[in-house]
Image (cartoon, rainbow over all chains, first blue to last red; front, side, top):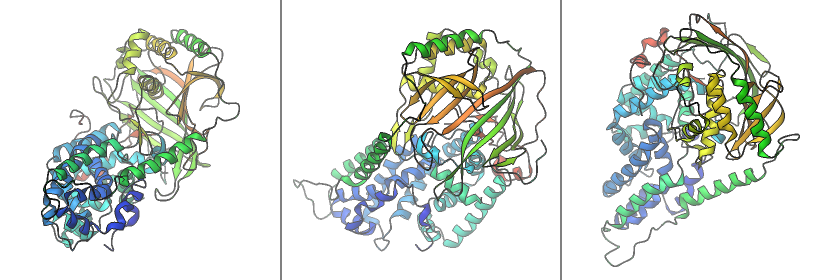
Length: 213
Length: 381
């Protein structure tokens, strides 16, 4: 996990939540115990639900996220007996399940991004108050970004968005069941496409030279 | 700013889920757990309890909520701020504003409405990972809007100033797509179709409009009917600045019927003009003011003032404001050269934040991101 960038993990508000079950052992131990004592699984939910919800929200919108969040954990619950308990951190596993469920809604995802790109209105984003107080120059770019995401292949987008959510290369590889080298090459391709789509068009930032217009 | 930073900010903009949203999923998982026999222990008859205290997520949420409430409790009004006279004073101003609307000319369908709007907004500088540093930004915005909505218009920001640095142009002219009959942008003609009786208009404004609820921290603030109506009025006025006279009349009459409206006798709008404002506060955070010229009672602008300090912003800061500088009817819109196209937010008034999505020109459009025409398909979601 050395390549996880901690600042990218989850939301600021979610941060304290990760710790709530911390004293009782890592995810693997929790899942292991839930095999015999199913209710222990709630602890896993409490640790990771917010981050997974945010991940799904970013890809499918807030309403679909509620539904898929429950599905993700129900699938995980059903598979808990097969969890590789040598993996202390269950995030790659959970993100992987969520990503596969999102994959069934690929058209919805593309439609969601295009709607953001077209209208400039992001239904997943905080419309008022605290989050808006953090409004940054990047905001005006989100429409272009959404359009770029809509244009990526699903495989590239999976990798890009898992890494954005704070998974490292190894964890992303685990989540998707692909080699680490493939993660690297897909990520490079996805980043390049997004970079091209955003290239030099940040309207909230100064243009070095006056554009004609 | 590199693309990973933009992506992380895009991700970070996602609303934290409200407790109820997680609770439903959690209940489903617990129900599955309860109906599932443990493989060794937990045999029948033995009560199964979650091993981990429920405090978990909810405890943390409660802590954050308490902090939010504490901040709210320190809410103070700025000196010389709002007076709360009898509601009739605010409604008298709105009635006069309604009457003043009728003296405005009505453009024809083939014409364009040209508006110049001064706006002020708080701009966060620095990385999203550190506490933002706020600069007050001022800008001038130009719009050529097709009256019928059937011809492409133009939008641009010829100059702006942030923290003493002036830029010109700030946003080269981009297209306002022709959009007759399409949701997303309301043309003058679309606005002419709204009800012109204040009662019918108020019902329309109060209706849920598919906009996401506002949030404070992780608490979702459900907009009530009155909040929605006031927010919609500010959105329509802020996005258009000039609206059909009969709609304007009905809008201000409807505003006079919304509870909780106060009068601010002495405000300054984004163009620096003194005015009278009627204002309403939603969720204790933002006070949204409609500003009128002192003698003529003509509408001049919209302003959002923060009533909650936080993130380095003080109480009383102008979060966003715009004021009409000039309006005239013209026959043509200029050619545009900037990438992307204009799409204002329909869910709230936010000057300076506008969609420029779906690149249709420019070198970068050769990537797969421009695979679909921006306005060719029906809106998703």
